[in-house]
Image 1 (cartoon, one colour):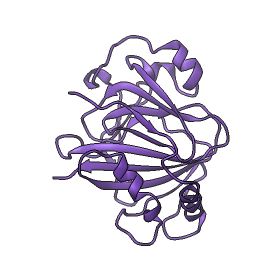
Image 2 (cartoon, one colour):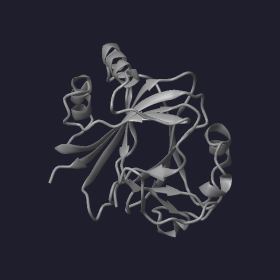
Image 3 (cartoon, helix red, strand yellow):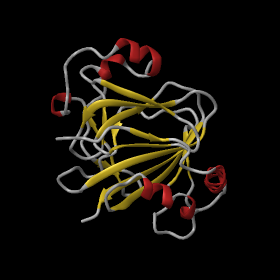
Image 4 (tube, helix red, strand yellow):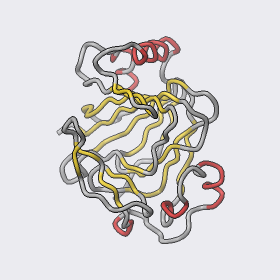
Length: 225
């Protein structure tokens, strides 16, 4: 299966757009999901009570084919970092997966996202060899919880080799090295507010060990039927 590379669009969001999206995120409303380690908001793309107008042209610019937005997710990582995972929805058998787009909105220092040369065609999952395998469960609000994959043999481009030591030392020291065994380093995308980081939804990735807190906005899209 041929996958598109990670692409970074520099300064695609104006300063006014970044400021407006930040302000909306920090306003108290019914979208707030506040936890001790991370605060998030997930408005529907079509809803008229969030500032979609500041970002919709940019989302169109990074898509060459007709698309539809599945999910909008603002996330403010206070103390937690996303470990190795994939944002593949229900998987390629059930959806025509398109792109994941990360818009960095606030950084406190060097921080970024690490992408691997590995892809997963099943439903959205976390990857860890040091945890117990978990099938799909459900959260308190009824949304499906990500499965935990411990056997990487079905991961595309799984090598079975130790992970790149230099990449680990530079970007991923907060993770268990054992969890990265067999994965291949692709690239590191540093966060700069105003940029857009675009990647295939099947591609494994993880937050870097950079400075927290950080605020980002993720948009997940599918090809139109």
